[in-house]
Amino acid sequence: MKAKILIAEDDANIRLGLVATLESESYAVTAAGDGAQAKKFFAQQKFDLVILDVMMPQVNGYDVCRDLRASGSRVPVLLLTAKSEEIDKVVGLKLGADDYLTKPFGVQELLARVEALLRRGRLSAMAVEPEAIEPTFKLGKATIDRRKFTVTLAGHSQSLTARELKLAETFAARAGDVLTRDALLNAVWGVDYFGTTRTLDQHVAQLRKKIEMDPEDPQVIVTVHGVGYRCDS
Image 1 (tube, rainbow, N blue to C red):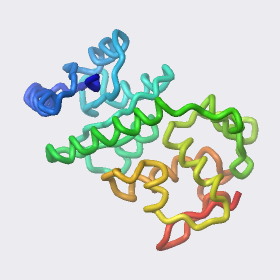
Image 2 (image 1 turned 30 degrees about the vertical axis):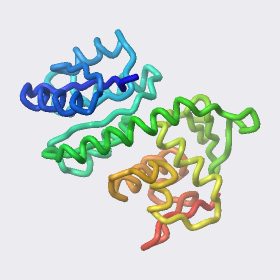
Image 3 (image 1 turned 120 degrees about the vertical axis):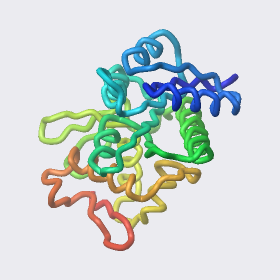
Image 4 (image 1 turned 180 degrees about the vertical axis):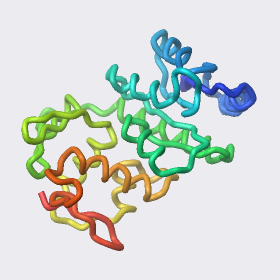
C-alpha cells in the first residue's frame, strides 16, 4: 500500500512542489494550506507521516505538532522551517517532532528523510513489546514508564517523546559505557539518518531536563568531551 503523507504548507508554490515531488515517488499525498486544515484532515484519516511548515498563520506547525502529541499520536513528524536558529529547532524537537529541514532544501534530501522516517515508523508499528521487558526502568533517580511514555522524578511526572524514550533506553542498557555520538545516532535514529550530531545533542539536553536533579550539572548522563556521552546510572 502507498504510504499516506499529510503536508501543511501555506505557500501555494512550495505546497504544489512538495505534492508533485512526493506523488512522483508514488506516495499518497493530502495537502493542507494551514495548520487548522491539517488538524481537520488528520482527524479524518490515518497518515504514515506528517510534514509541517513551521511558519503558518493562526495555527503554526509547532501548534499542530504539539496537539498531535497531546492526542497520543506517534506518527512521525517532519518540520520545515526557514529559520536556522538553534532555539527554533530545539522547540520543535521538544514538542515531539522527529526531524526537521531548513529551507531551502534539496529534493533528494527531502526524499531521503521522508523514506527514513517512514521506515522507522513501519518498524515501530510492527514492534511488539515482549512480556519479559519491564514496563518501567530507572535512569538515575528517575523512573521511566515505557508504556505511558512518562518520566517521574521527585514526584513530578512529565511526558517523553518516542525519541527521548529510545535514547533513555539506550543509555540504561549501556550504563557505564562511553557511547560515541555516531553510535547513539545509529541506535536511536537508525543507520540511514541524514542529520547531524547537533540533533542528538539537543535531544540529550531535553532528556537531561527531565531526568537530572540539576540539568546544569548532570550526574546521570555525562558528557565525554570529544567522544560522546556516558550514563552513570
